[in-house]
Image (cartoon, rainbow, N blue to C red):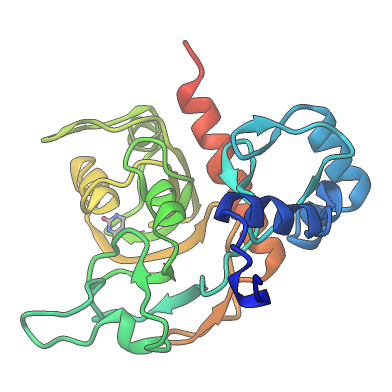
Length: 267
Ligand code: URA
């Protein structure tokens, strides 16, 4: 007589099918988007209706349900939601700190100014002498897109330069100047007070702002980054850091997606 122990187990795939059937249907996509900071449910419904949201690579339809821990959700190609364990800091980098994980000359590094766990990396570089806003994260995909040299997000700097810059030189900065690694792209440049330039660029070449100012004969005396895409913070003191809010993360993801769209659009 067959005992209970001898009844063969159903094959694994049948067990999985059964488990799947028992899984809850998931949450409404617009609810998940809204909870990760993409706006009100109505705004999120509009995103879905406009075909800007994909689930596991397929354009999602209104009414779609998802399991946020399992399904890969993207808006305009940017992953949605903060995966567990990902952190995003903005630091006001003080002058003299280096943007590497370890300095061979023993200088203080920016990673020493933020929590050590989880381990984060600076997004792009600022020169040791440059001050101002720097993002640090363990989200490699977003970091890569923000810092991309040719289609990274806008970065704004205040550059205190030697001498008052005449209009013609400002125009050169705006139109592009010849550097040893090629012409710079168009930039937004103003001079809010004599010798102080507000420069917005979206390239990320090595020492770019310093070299641009040098090229017009007005070397930089002090350089401060005041904005990275939508992220700015005038109240953060040098050496201080804070986590990005959900809204800031969303705005940053949107800015990166927008830049990628502009970059990928056929000209
Ligand atoms: N441009 C520079 O010249 N230096 C920086 O640190 C950032 C932009």
